[in-house]
Amino acid sequence: MGLNISEIIPRREIEISDLKGKIVCVDAFNTLYQFLSSIRQPDGTPLMDRKKHVTSHLSGIFYRNTNLLSEGIKLVYVFDGIPPEQKIRTSRRRKESRDVAEEKYETAKSEENIESMRRYSSQLLRLNDEMITESKELLEAMGIPVIQAPSEGEAEAAYLARIKKEVYASVSQDYDSLLFGAPKLIRNLTLARKRKTISGWVEIKPEMIELDKVLNALEINLNQLICIGILVGTDYNPRGIPGIGQKKALQIVKKYRQPVLIFKSVEEQMMSMPEDERFDWKEIFELFHKPNVINEKFKFGKIDEKKIKKILVDEHDFSLERVEKQLEKLHEIQEEMKQKNLGKWF
Image (cartoon, rainbow, N blue to C red):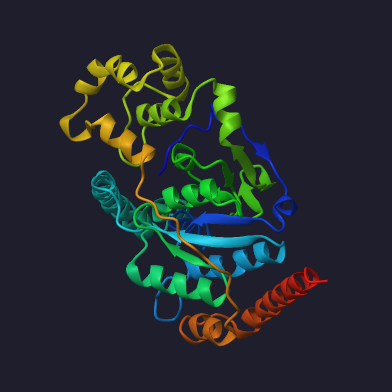
C-alpha cells in the first residue's frame, strides 16, 4: 500500500543515464512486490517453474537489475527485519483482504474471466521466507550488496542515504521514504520501461523527488510532513482519518503547525472512527521520527556464475541460453569497473 501524497509532492523526471556511477539503496520488499505484481502471465498468474514455485521475483532481480547495472548504476538492496507492532496489525488486515480477493479470483477463474482474474490475482501477492532467502542469494551472486535492516527496510535505506556521502538516493515506489528523511527518493527505477494502457504503450521514466525541495514548495518542515502522512494514512494507520485527503491535510498542517495542535484539531473525527481503526498518532510519529536503523557497511562483490546458474537454471528452469547472455553483460560490466578502478592509480 504505502502512503499516497502524490498530488502535493513536486517531482521531476530523470534519465537512467543521470544515475550512472551513483550508489542507490533499494527498498527490497517494495521492489520484490513490484516484480511479483508486474511480471505475470495474461491471466495474472505469476511466472512459475515446473514445480509450481513462483519465479517472477527472480526474473525481475536478474533481468531488470542487469539492465540497471549495465547503465552504470550501483545497487544496494535493503531487506526488512522485524516490523513494528503497528505494521503487524496492518498485515493482519491485509491478510483478510487477500482472503476476499482469493474468493473473487476463484469465481473469475471458474467463469474464465481473464480480466478479473488478473485484477484479483494482484491482490494475492505474498513474499514468503523461501522467496526472500533465494532473492538475497541471487543478488549476492550478482555482486549486489544485501543489507538486513533491524526493522523497516525503507527506513534503513532512507537512513543510509542520509548519513553516507557515497549513497546518492533511496529507491522505492512509496512516499514513506520521505517521512523517514530520505534526502533523495527515486521512483519507477525498477519498473519496466514501458507500460501498456488502454490508449497504447506509454514510456515510464524514473522520477526524482528531493526532500528539501518538497519542504520548500509546501512551506513545511519534516515533522509537519510526517503529520500529513498520518492524517492521510500510512502503513501504520492505513485508513488515515476519514474525510481528510492530501490537500486538506496540507491545509490543516499549515494552519496549526505543531503536531499536538494539528491532531487536537481533528480529535473529534479520530474519536468517531471505528475502535479497531483508531490509532495513537504519537506512536506513529515516533516510528517515523526515530526509526530503528543501523549504520551498516556494505561492499560490492564478484559475480558468482555457478551460483546464478544453480538458482535460475537448475532450481527454477530458466533458459540457460538467456541466462548466459545476461551473464555476458554482467562480466562486461565488472570488467569495465576493474578498468576504471585501475585508471585511478595512474
